[in-house]
Length: 224
Image (cartoon, rainbow, N blue to C red):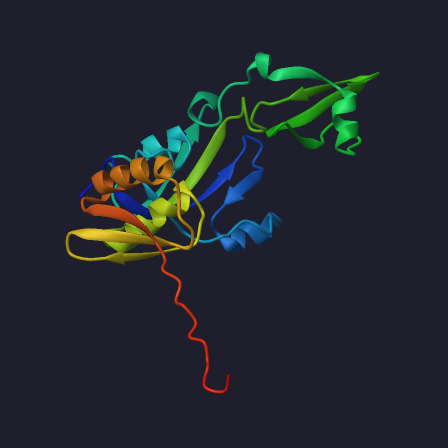
């Protein structure tokens, strides 16, 4: 049966620019071949929920009506991928802003300014021209995709949804009609309530959050 919105599917992908440059992949051999040595990246198949913005829009849309197993390639224009460049996101920043962070700005340097990531374009006198656009804005992107299988297991569905929503340690337990997500720390209701409601709709069973109860260590008083 063809894939539809809110289906979960396991897949591999490789993303490349028009000149053939590979900048992202879930395939370890491809990552090694193209020297993508980001230590924080995990090059392995991913599970995504279609229509939940867990991939760029164009790729997300391309999954609909595909068979759960197979290969395809899709070429995305900037609007379907990482967006067109917005000139309003190119700004002049006082060089003193960088000096306060003990940073020496130079063209091409990626910087963090008040929580916003930018690329330094030019340094002139006491001002620095920075670009807050996504580094891949205005780029045409091609994705080569291998669809591995549709995921029907509720536990896997919830775990994968959580991995995209917030990367925090948790334990998922699933019963016939409900699931419990147990976390180390108490999370605010402003986060858990909408997430719980959304997952309940997508997965089809009630999903609730609880805090892990820490076991109390029994004190040995025998020799006290």
